[in-house]
Image 1 (cartoon, rainbow, N blue to C red):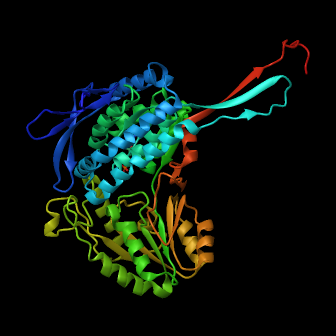
Image 2 (image 1 turned 180 degrees about the horizontal axis):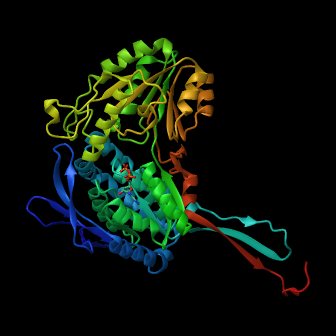
Length: 505
Ligand code: ADP
């Protein structure tokens, strides 16, 4: 492929990744690089450009130029859509390779990441198809001799700031609608998982996107993310990450009067009633908390279980969770992988200690995993705490690890009261065979997504986002392209003569 290669080999052992700006691989202005780690072996596997405000400036200027000049603003919506469709077609053959790179960086299971990178093509296909279906309206005006219509126009430069748990997928959620709408983008990947999005730039080029339309600046949050969010030429910030960083970004957006959409943390309840199909509920609860080693914003980290079945349910849960095979995330047989980074590993272990200190009882796990198959990696044992009260920190704060807090409830009212008594509201699960109960619960749960008798279903077709401190705005689905558009109202006079301005009409 005759394209600028964002990857070059600078040492015998470690790959080197540089920024991708204006269609080219670019060395960081400060000439600094940092090591990115493979969490399975706790060793570095590549070097990544450590950007700063100068790199951000370069990337935003490139994106701003590409928005205003050159081929991109002249493309029709159909032509933009065609580029996205071509990109979607290019993803399939590359999806496994991209997934392997992500696993190297974040330690999530290859089986999950490969499914995710393949599924990701749907976002580009869906928004590619949508690009030329955004129609304005002719407004029936109340003024004589006027014609008024609306058009929906792109915003400008979008800053996409993404986390490490699903780097390419969460980039696609932003990139696909942003590009379909005609914006240009600067992506700031997580410092822990920058490689896959840089490799993805090869596909962006091969699809035929003009230089500057998509740029990537790597590095740390305060050094790259902050100046990017603050940059006056950035029109909107699309963010997924922690609520702490979300607050900083929101402040920055307020100063610049920028638009934001943000998807933040969660402390989602998985609610099991005594009329549920118990085997299904056990599987749903397990997948809700132990998939991705609990490192998903939608993790069902609070299990609310009806008191009448509490003991039996916990027994079954523990028995099932005990069968989880830990080990190399690249192996097809592994079911629980390592934690992505050392800081997160320490944080999870700290939360386990906090829970014990609060009086919760670990009926499974409760510390680091020392199984031989875990080697020197950052592994935490799948952990289940009983005796949890909803006011405890383990029930209120996002752990982002394989730690489940079990809380009993008496009836529907009690379940709702506990479920909604957190500052987050990203998702919730309900397990029951009673349709009326399912509908009532789905109405009363203060969460952006409610799953009934399933958990973790997410699609390009369906809006996703948070209530309360779990976020602002939504991603996915048709309407969400509006988050990347602004509406212009155009008035045209058809009067032969402009009336006398001193005569009020
Ligand atoms: P997580 O714990 O999920 O990594 P963070 O909020 O720390 O969540 O990180 C999400 C993204 O936000 C990462 O790309 C990170 O580098 C970036 N980030 C961190 N701090 C800031 C900041 N002050 N301003 C902008 N972006 C930041």
